[in-house]
Length: 129
Image (tube, rainbow, N blue to C red):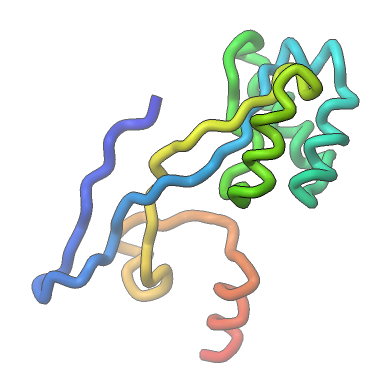
């Protein structure tokens, strides 16, 4: 389980690190091993790379019977469809997890320890500076 994360403010009470809920798609490695076709179906729903999702499943094989995150930040409509599919997507689930949120990922990353794969907006912002 994740440790609870606190809010961090600067001296003018501006939020510099917060917590917000994210929809996370999970997979139970042992179930996916029996029915690997499920990953292709979920990848299609998420518009994600099935190879990357399968890599996440394989990374979690040390805990073969426990749900492990394979996709963070699913859109609500897609997450709802995945959750409603239930028995048609064996081994797949959707949970809400508190995730660290940085309103400004550039200025204080060296102090706060921000590490994440940049999204297209981050890349664009860095290219502009």
